[in-house]
Length: 174
Image (cartoon, rainbow, N blue to C red; front, side, top):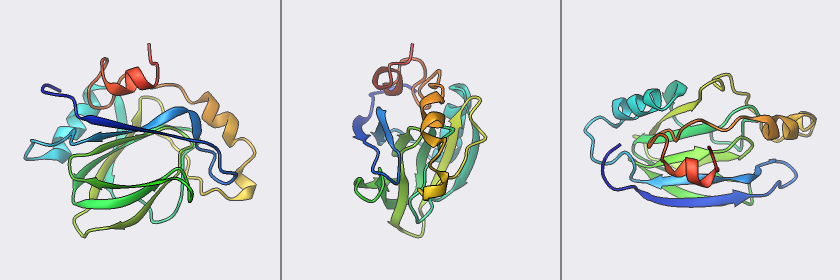
C-alpha cells in the first residue's frame, strides 16, 4: 500500500482467568488504513490476498466476548462504525470506524458493544490458519487453549502493508 502509514495503536492484554488473551503479541489498531478508496471491501480483500491472508468473510463482530486459540485474525472496517471491547470484560473499549483495521492475536477476546446499522467488517486469517476455533471463555474449554495460542505461527506478512508493515515490527516477524 502506497502513501503514509496510518497511526498505530497497540494494546497488550494479560490472561484474565476467563479470556486467555496474549501477553506476548499486541493487538494492533491501524486507524484509517483503508481510507481513500471508493470500495474498501474490494481494496482490503486485494491487500489480504497479496499479503497471504485468506478465508476472507464479510459480516459484523459477535456481541459477546470470544476469541480464537488456533489463529490470529484481522478485521478491516469497510462500513459504518462500532464500539468494540478487546481483551475481555476488563480490557479496553475502542471506537472503530470505516477505514480502520484491527489485527487480533490468537487468544485475545473481542466483543461488539454496539454498532450503527451500516457497520461491516471483512475478516481474514494468516495463510494456514483459515480453520479457526470459536471460544467464549467457558471453564471447560480452558485445557489446551493456552498451548494452542502459544503454538500459533506468526504471519509471514502484515495484512495491509506486507513485509515491511507494523505487524512485522511489533510482532518481531522475520
